[in-house]
Amino acid sequence: MNINNIRSDFPILSRRVHGKPLVYLDNGATTQKPRCVVEKIQEMYYSVNANVHRGVHFLSQAATDEHEASRRTVQEFIGAASANEIVFTRGTTEAINLISSSFCREFCKPGDEVIISAMEHHSNIVPWQLQESILGIKLRVLPITDEGEIELEELERMLSSRTKLISITHISNVLGTINPLEEIIEIAHRHDIPVLIDAAQSVQHVPVNVQQLDCDFLVFSSHKIYGPTGMGVLYGKEKWLDKLPPYQGGGEMIASVSFEKTTFANLPFKFEAGTPDYVGSTALATALKYLSDIGLENIVRHEHEVLRYATEQLLAIDKLKIYGTAKNKSSVISFLVDGVHPYDMGVLLDTMGIAVRTGHHCAEPLMRRFGIEGTVRASFAMYNTKEEVDTLVAGIKRIAGMF
Ligand code: PMP
Image (tube, rainbow, N blue to C red):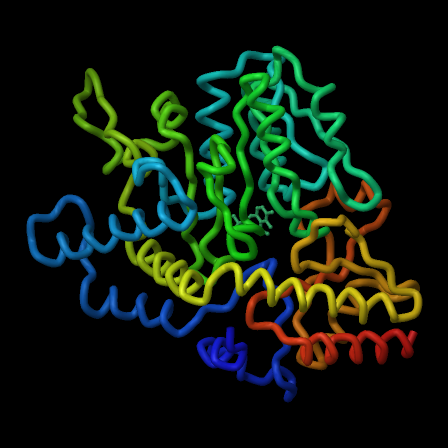
């Protein structure tokens, strides 16, 4: 894996910010886009654009072919058994809202429970809270340790005949913890409970195979895996998706409509009301192919080395504390420097061209668990280098010296 070649595929990485070379370490929020993805979007609008699925004319068929081929690319990328199990959504958030709404409507009575963990993003908390108020379900929270690892032995104790679903993140966007999905899914399935995986922070960092994992649902966002914004994926086992009612109504998702009775389309179209983002889907497929060509195993190795180096260098800074010290971690580091507010750290790093995220990272309950308001978060992608880590470390030292 040649890091310079990879960096040259991302035009934005060579721009300057505040007169300094950009050091982009906010990849947990969104990743930058390689040239091939942006060119695919341009090609789709310049040469292929037409609405999909309905047209008999050449362009409509070409756009439909591209869109459906992209579904198969996603299917292959996550190892799904069938393209019918791939539903295109606007992102992780919409995919979780789809499942929480349709699943709870079909399978939950008042008092039934959904289990999440203490390290979830708001998008895997609030949709379930909406179902608490609509249907009277109950949200239960699996605790985590001070290192930021889930307390697996608690899970077994929390399960009961009322438990209807476990919805958990694969990798924490704040702590970087890689959760033990195999064990969680094994425990859940022993009790006939389905599992939804929030893979928003994982598919771009580690190989994910839904059939090997045996998860029932898995969701991710295109924009965090080098693809376009406004596009995402819901994977669901066919046996589950078949049983779920539609989430939204409209064109594309019907078999036939009359004022008396409407029937719904087969999978996956039942869950795709309205004109789909066929430009987004093809650009996402381009991003996945780009990633596969580089090889996720090479990306894992590189990012792990950057994480190891960054952790070592940051820990050497006086009064710096890292939040999230799980044994199995992805390339995210949340930290605080004693006496420096994370917001000040973020603003001052920005003046040096260094982009990090500060605040609660859409995980307020997790912040409360650690008794803090927020952190500074550096999140690394395949194009980040040890030299960029050095720039970050020098920046933090300078700022710490000012306070
Ligand atoms: N889950 C996790 C773990 C995330 O990190 C994010 C994005 N920060 C989301 C869900 C929500 O993703 P999106 O905003 O793309 O829907």
